[in-house]
Image (tube, rainbow, N blue to C red; front, side, top):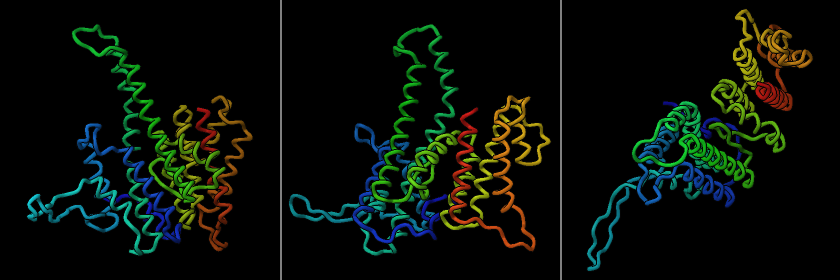
Length: 352
């Protein structure tokens, strides 16, 4: 199975020229966040069986993408002396957490160029937070069902021993804490990146090159927070593709930003029951949003601005130019196209 990792996505995009104490600290701190997110041991010091399997999964996925059997040596063997001075062999296997820790915190001695070395370590951190994020998303998806079951338990007459208190209140508190803790871990990782002067940010399972700090704060983060809901999965996927293509200097990143925006418009039209089935493109879906019969979700002038975005950005690079020069956006124009699409998605979603 193929796994999308940071090191591969940014293979041709240089980020680090040297490995310094700052990068060493960053990797150590980032690994600590993964340990907090997926604790390997219980409070009694015993292995958490479920999380042990998750750490093995993380190891195996990264090892396969890096083309190695082990990311760090797991089997150990050495001799030890007893009280009488006699030597005896000691051997065994280290925990999966220890193996992963040795990989991420490995000493840099010019095994390869610093950029590749750090990217491979960062890839483990990305996979760890992605795995925990998927768990949180699954728990949130089941929350409404579990809440209904808890309400039924609360309404059922008590018989025999029963834990006091409301099951609904307990579930709500647990869910809120779970989300708060994970959001805090993500926020810490992004702050660690900032303090280490690493131009990176984590959102919704992926570490990517960050925008300007102010834009990231006012546009990027609100956008990613909104599209974390499964309803906007395709919007999330296409926008990440747009950023990856921009950062790796691949073809047509703005086209994927426009696709993300178009998906958001279609989802809203469908969710509101406005889609007729005769639409032939983004402009017709925009018409659904500005229709007076539909309550003018958007003002007419807003709809015209949206249509103009698709005409000037998506259509110009999404169709063959024939004998004309191949259209190509400059980097500042690409940044504008991506940031504008994010802003539009944010305002559209917030109006639902």
